[in-house]
Image 1: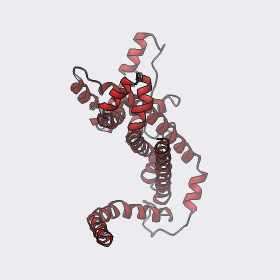
Image 2: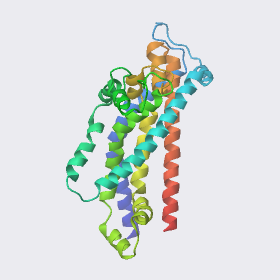
Image 3: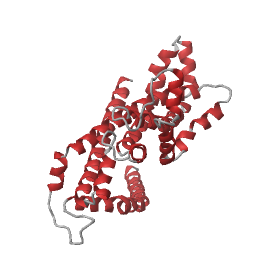
Image 4: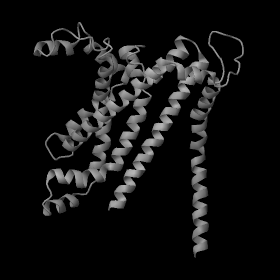
Length: 302
């Protein structure tokens, strides 16, 4: 009997690999080949303004990248942006999801309205917020002046001390619905019986959240945080539309684009793009490891 089951399991595993093969080939063609070409160019002195064949220079581009303070400034901007935006979006998304999960009149309309910022293309929303944050004609400054919160209009996207935080605020406005949607989907799957049992045991709202709700939605919450962190680390369009090539907000993607397009340095720009890929891969590994450790600790505690 066991031999029959083993043969069946082996056959199913072989069939699963055959079903996955087209997807694996597609990923290798769409993502693997461009990545391999980028890594190869990063090892050469290729330029767009030269017709001669690129020469192999080894790790020279990476050594120059490590020594470039503008690169480390871009890394710092990206990390600060990712940590600040993902933290705010997670907290706000959790609060909004808990509110929308309650039974109330107009809940369906509120859920639909919540998705509007997320549905707007990033370039469009960035352009809209660029006008709203304008220091002369922006409605944000007009509102703050009317309320007496500021004495003069603020250059939100031009002031180096404010620009990065303005980009974070716009990203939080746009992407909080994504976090809310994932968390709300996890809340909808929780059975009502556990809360009924908690009411019988006299567990209050705070206790129910920290002892029941949060542990049960933690896997979905970790998935949402991982997706948003990876998306934030590769941010380009929001920063570029709002602030251009400003050093105060330049992300790693903006830096790589500047080297590749404006300076036409394919080799050095490819090294920057490869560095971005390595940082995102490292962040993915760390987040997945942290998620497994937390889930394992939670299961051990139970």
